[in-house]
Length: 88
Image (cartoon, rainbow, N blue to C red; front, side, top):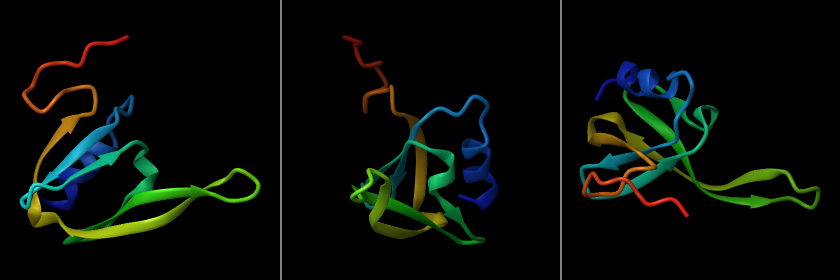
């Protein structure tokens, strides 16, 4: 995957939260386009959050991934087998 491919998904208007599928089977959810830092060959993605004493969301842990290991994107509203989740 190229940086441009990731940016195209991040720049969708309106933005739709999505899941990144990696070659090792890992799945990372992207709920906000501003949460990812993209370079030419890698991206930094928060994996765990916490709140400070004033209620602000802070990144607790993150992961640096090689863009070449991104296999596909899927909408968070889709299940793994391609069927849409039922809304409650």
